[in-house]
Image 1 (cartoon, rainbow, N blue to C red):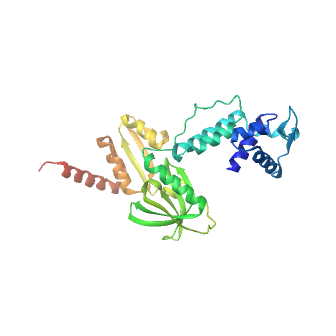
Image 2 (tube, rainbow, N blue to C red):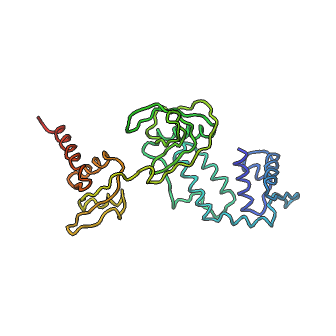
Image 3 (cartoon, rainbow, N blue to C red):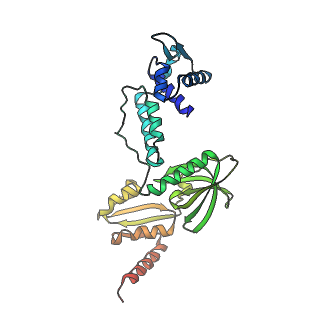
Length: 302
């Protein structure tokens, strides 16, 4: 694409004093005439370009403008490339790797692979997740609706949305869009979406940014207190942080945290086996006991 090529040309010229049109044409596999048109477009965009003829000639950026070379330091460029590489982990293509090559062109001291930071945005569900991300990504750019079968705690339903943003949050991928059935903006988890298809074109509306605060998405309706066995300290730290509990004189851990859903509290407590005791809310203790009795009945021999 022309824009990608222009970004690549600009990146090279910000890192080298002068390059020839022939070398740029060879690098981007286009004609010299195309390179000159790109240079003209960069000039029109406000970047002062200089073209010199002769044996030592070439294309360069006007000396007074070269202070902009410092806009992206070596570490800045490495951070950009790391971010782009992470997108290829879920894109199913190498488009971002190609863009990385263009951005890093001419940076002689930048390693081809900056491997001390590795970001993989994929998941165990990559085979099914990647096609959804690509389809929704294209639908957002082309302005097409997306329909799908959605599985939520309250049941299954067919949904049709106007997609506006792909979001990676809380270790999961979501799409933010206008839901035709709810007549409002909603957040949908991609892993709960099946039979995803694109539909008709739509006229884009002004889309507000989603409120992804914990108070909005996971409001603390129930304040839980529980006594947890010390061998599960690692789990409390991993799931809720070291501030979520205090060590008691007998070595047990007094856990305190807010939960959104009653069923999640019950399933979380019983997942510790006999290593957890729910203290509050007191009203849920009977629910935990009932759940345990049902499990016992299911696995007990008659």
